[in-house]
Length: 434
Image (cartoon, rainbow, N blue to C red; front, side, top):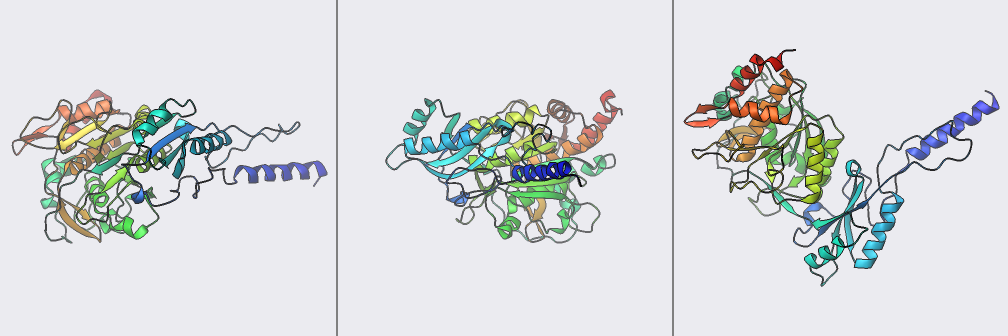
């Protein structure tokens, strides 16, 4: 090898090593990008802590003269740049803040941190001061969210095929719709609790999982709400196991952003931090549908991330709050498809009705049980959306919503979405022609 060629290869190797090195993170951070730093999210206090974001522009390192031939090898990671590190250090010192954890949001060019206000300072007072600080891009409370599921009745777990007991499957004529589409090729992101990854009815359906809460794999597999939602959407068909999902050929990505508090019978909870990490993660994927069977107060950071997802053409489906008031996150965002449990009263304008009471679905530990809540109604609509997208991949959120609304049918005296009529309507429309 010639001497010049040798130095060229060596230089390339050196640059590659620098590019893949671990990025700089703020001093209080204890985890690499994409991981939760510091204490478990369940120890965060939504009545005390705040979420703060600073600008995080990352620029390529300067090149020495004569090095332009090699170019810049981009880093595989996105962490905190020097500007963000310096700004955060100054803010923490100036306001007496303690960092709980921090994480980068590449899609927004921000570095976010969860901070504990200093002792004796009211959170509202701190937020008002930070709102006037030009170094701060966003400052808001760390807010709490919950999944929408009714209390579980004390019923037995089923371990045999009971498709005829699947109320939602039967009432939406899903079996008829699956003669034309099973959701093949459609990637769905579920933001929820964990999911039983070993459940036989979900084998082959889950492509990847992401834990935004902790590193506890056993707890992830024991979480019920996410397991229930996943089963309604995509439980396997013709496998001699339990039930059939609305879209049994769809592929799922699971983002655990919610967890169960220690108190018995308490519903799953989420917060601004975990939900933001999940949404930011989805932005960099090819997930076509996002299921958010949860909700809570409006949130500036979450609204920014949701707007980014919607601008990318994602179809976001969420559950209507139990009180029936649509004015929070994510239900009030324009473009989000909101679903409620079918009832005798009229739904709010634009809100879809779907089966959500006494729904038989998958449970942790390989079992099956009945559950209720608008979370299950949203899961049915997510599955039907996958059936439609598999036939017409270019459908947008408005088209899916309008098609489901106008193809809804009366079932047991209630107007609700119908998988078969939606698929038939799509097939007969000119835009469904290949």
